[in-house]
Length: 506
Image 1 (cartoon, one colour):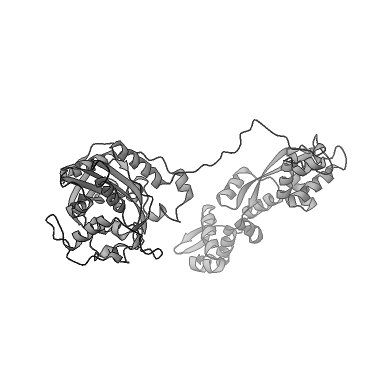
Image 2 (tube, one colour):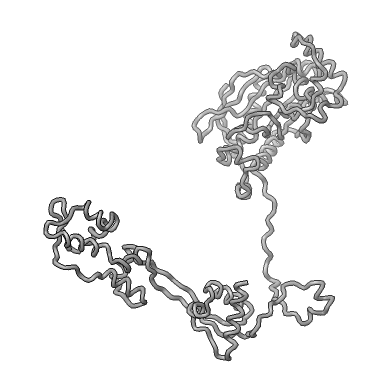
């Protein structure tokens, strides 16, 4: 609205005669009582449609700072200090008394300048005069001259700038004349051809903006992969290169049977408590599980088999049928192994992997969330050993650039032996846990119907931890969740892991 008013004023002023010009928009805006900023905006807008022509005018001058304005009013600090020293007489005045009279800041600046000009000196703790009268206040006079627009000696100006009493200002304004398309009233050109124009015929007389058909359109912002997805894609490629087949993990809700019972995890295990697991209210129970397999799993829990004595408790169907958000992707692994054991043609060795989301009822902090992504791999084959497990883990971590590994004995309900995997973190300069591993227990494999000499080795790690290390992210909430910055997702580089030699320690 303000620009439109300024446009109307400019066009009206130039309509006075063919030769009328605005010599300087700055002075003209003051005379017309219009903001110069609005006038400049109107000039730039009118230039686009050639209503006017404009030549830029640059004016360089100095503006007084608040301290400079104060000196024009009260005089310079050095004159104020000299006056006090002269009034004190030949004995001079102490610094404390001087500060009381003129103020601490004025005393500090004024004393230094007086000493430099040799107007005062020191006699013990007092300041004493070295001149008999107060000279002309050259600083105040120079500031008054600059304020009035008069010329001032260059050395004096430099001194005023050094004392921060003035600051340089560059003002841009315009000399404005009529343009080739000048008219007393501006008619806005239409940017688009509308249906209404076609219906009424107004398009025949409506002025349109010119089109540049050679200009490229604005770059379309496409989708950007989240850092987790970039690392996931790289892990997926590595695992497929190692001969692993991806498991279908697009089912977040599982029954307690597949998530816990089929893994030979007792129904009294603390992980099955509501404090650690998210249970589903509706539907609260699964519809069915394979009946014969259920009975074999139940018997293994209650009585054992194949040399195991089981857990010796009453296995409850209502507990096994509870629905929950899966706590690990091993729930899918157990289903795949069951299908592998009971497929047409019998068991065939297989390598499986999955990278998907799991859920734990945990307290959230800088390194823990209630949901995260688990990377899991397993190999099912005849007569596998712990050495095969270590070798497979070494191969995978070598491909993602982990140069040093250590394995520590651990306990898992469904693997024996079990090992924690530690890797050396070059940035932190220390060993850190990066995964877990083990061989699935016979009590888990036997009810599935797998041949007796088939062994299954498995390992897993979170996707978030290597991603945080790769992208130097310290807080997991900056990586995953509602606090993630979209700019970081757009700017995250492509994930690449360098394959290097590995050193492993058991």
